[in-house]
Structures are given as C-alpha cells and as structure tokens.
Image (cartoon, rainbow, N blue to C red; front, side, top):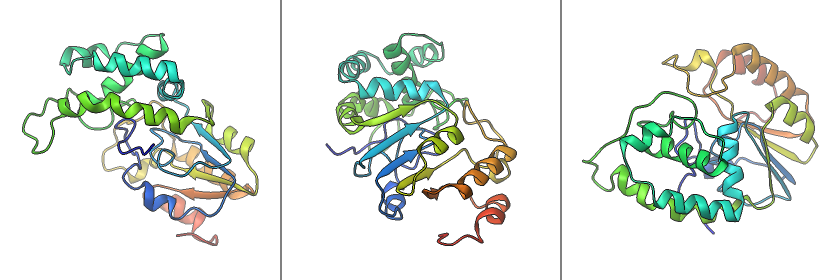
Length: 242
C-alpha cells in the first residue's frame, strides 16, 4: 500500500524530500533511523531485511506503537472519525493521558489542528482555523486523515520500534551493512528563531558527541541538517560527503 501523506505534521519532517534522500542511500541490509520523528523517509522507502525506528520522545513512539498494531490502529481510526475539528478538541489534546490509543489520538489532533508543525513535537502552537485555502481547508484534511492509517500499519510490520538515546541505539545496531539515516534536531546556531521545537533537543555539545560516534562506526551514514561550522569541521575532510 502506498503512503501518500505524512503520518503527522512534524517539525523537520523529510516526507516531501524522502525520494531525494533515499536516492543517496547505498545498498544495505539493515536500516536505522535514530531520530525517527514522523518517519517521513521510512514510510516511503522499500523495506530492508531489518529496520529500526527510534525516538527519545515517548509521545511519538507511542503513536507508532499504536499505528503498528492492527487492532489499535483500527480503534485509532474510529476515534479520529468521531473527533470533530474544533478548538476544544485541540485544547483537550494538550492534557496528558496514559491510555495509549487516546494518547495517540491527542497527538494527531495536536499535529493536524495546530498552526505550524511544532505542536506534535513539543513546540508551542495555536489552533489552525483557516477557511480560505484554495484546495482544502484543515478541517477537510482532518476528515480524510483516518483513511491513511491502514497503509501505515502495513508498512510498519517488521519494523523494530525503540525509545532510547540515539547514540546507544547506533552502537547497538552498528555493522558494515547497516544504513543509518541521521536527522537530528537542528544545530542551535543554524536556527533563525531560537524557539524550542522538540521535547528533546540537542545542545551543540551533544551534536559534537554524536559526530564523534558517527565517525567511529562501521556502518554507512546519511545526515540531514543545515550547513554549520561544527558539521563542516568534522565531516568535510571525510570521503563521500555530498
């Protein structure tokens, strides 16, 4: 089943760039996303022998765990069908809850009804109530959202879903035929606005630590991010940098 739409609107998601990103991947047996986020690339690439999705944010990990389970996926679809597009629902979605399906529903409500893409990843956002869009309003898109979830469930079969620090995961799955797609939070110095967009950010020091690990592993690595002095200094002397 083809996935035509992002799982959720998520800050920094590479869903629209996924085909271009994938075109740069060498042959591999194991595919790992240490900073999985909305899994924009994973959702569009052909399945590998082994695949690992990881994120430190338990909110988005819970969503993917629910989406992967057929019974819970169907319950989430039904819950979304019954959810009106409203400011009250958006405000309710900010309240934490333990039930995994309702927790997932509230996350997709924040993502779909929030203004901008930061509401799903820990950033601040207001309610998106546009009514003048030429092709489809946000409420029209919300009405169609549940019908896309069955395809996501199918794609996630066989994918390991983890919730641990990225460096720990990288070391665990490193091998000569492992492909790591590394898309961490942007380096602080590259941001025009210094807003917090994620529940778990990386400091400049943590980016440096990540780079040291990536330079030491046996596997293959593709990195996404804005150009920065830190990454240039660490990576531009290495072979095969695009």
